[in-house]
Image (cartoon, rainbow, N blue to C red; front, side, top):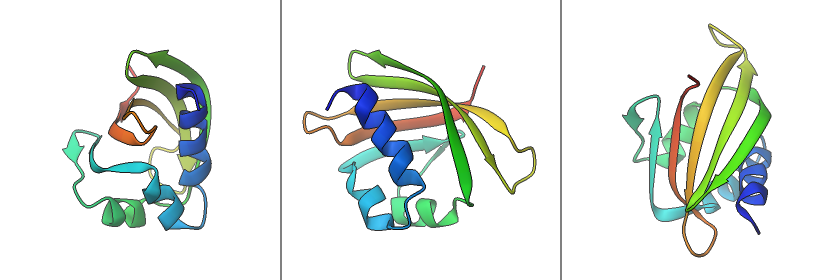
Length: 104
């Protein structure tokens, strides 16, 4: 899979009802930083995310991953919000790094 397909897969699994499928796409030592906070317990982080929709507006591959511009909408204050996702993938195509921050 190329990086654009891996990003598309991430967002498809993010709304999937099976958290194991979602979590399986992360490397065992993945580093996730969501809005400036490091998330070491990915299972708890995933459980705490409210039901949302992801509108992927752009994906830009780079040397070790891809950046994605996303419109996130759901039942939360400030919805919808534009976010920037920065993906880094390992050699097996698993997410090694994920940064999520407000779009600039």
